[in-house]
Image 1 (cartoon, rainbow, N blue to C red):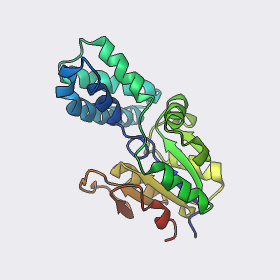
Image 2: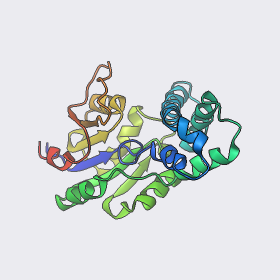
Image 3: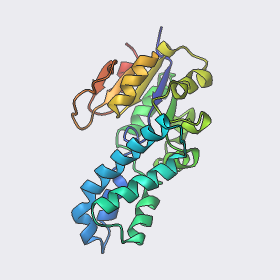
Image 4: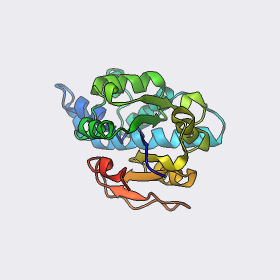
Length: 228
């Protein structure tokens, strides 16, 4: 069946999750943080993801904003920076204003020109996602922003992917699902979506029962892939 609907993970896929730490590190007076920001950004993202998985299997759901704060607190303490509350607040503020990757607006515009449905499907809470979409100025290029808060469990639970089918009244093989998380793309393959993994860092494929069907280094080629 033809692809009619292109669905994107948000954080790390459309929005650069390292941007908050990188931008804070460039601000005047943050010379100490500038020495640590790459590790903080990496730890922050890793713990954020780990906490979503742990909460899902432990049936202890909370919204993504709390998970994001928890991950940052761990990352700051791991780098010996937990004693700077102003830095913490600044990083959290910047997370609401994450930069989109440079190819995102044109890529989405090309999809809309092809007549594709376009949407975000994310662990993010609705307010966080709306803030990022507004900051990036891409709202007019998206038909919807879907959040796991509608089902109360994080990815890769099947009920999250089902939100796409309900919203767009389509079959799984009408969907191209795009994520920068290899595990997310793999599990979406298992659900029945056609999947693309945006592997910007050149990481190995996760050892899971399924694999992404398409592997790209950025989002530029996504409009082409909808014609498979």
